[in-house]
Amino acid sequence: MTDTSATRHVPSNTPPVDAVPGPIQTAPATGDPDPLRRTRTGVVWIGVIIFAVVLVLLLIFILQNTQPVEISYLGATGHVSLAVAMLLAAMAGLLLTAIAGSLRIWQLRRRLRRSAR
Image 1 (cartoon, rainbow, N blue to C red):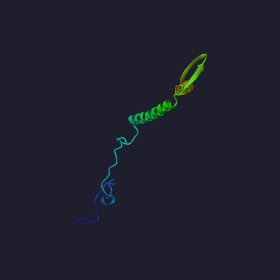
Image 2 (tube, helix red, strand yellow):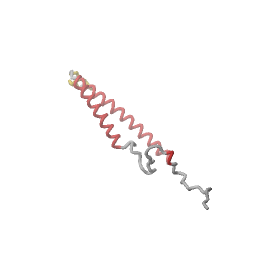
Image 3 (cartoon, one colour):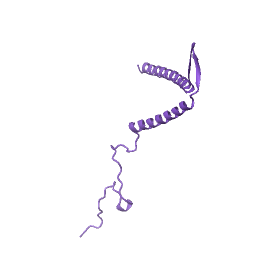
Image 4 (cartoon, rainbow, N blue to C red):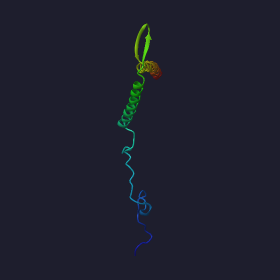
């Protein structure tokens, strides 16, 4: 006689055959990295594209502002194009901002090292 009350053992992590529509999809293993994650190469590529766009805009700016202007600074005088004068002023502002930011970062790191002791 056969025992009809006995059931076939099915592992709990295996879904029933009827519950899986279409092709069976497997989840990536836990050690596999996400294929769509952000990588250093991708970030560098985005940076290169942004840099190229800024250079094109800068070239357009320089080509449209070629009128000569007189610049005087601490007694020195000279004639340069308007674009060059504006770019020099922007670079000076950027340099001052970088110096102030670097000093603040240095100050915070020094304070952090002192508090860690």
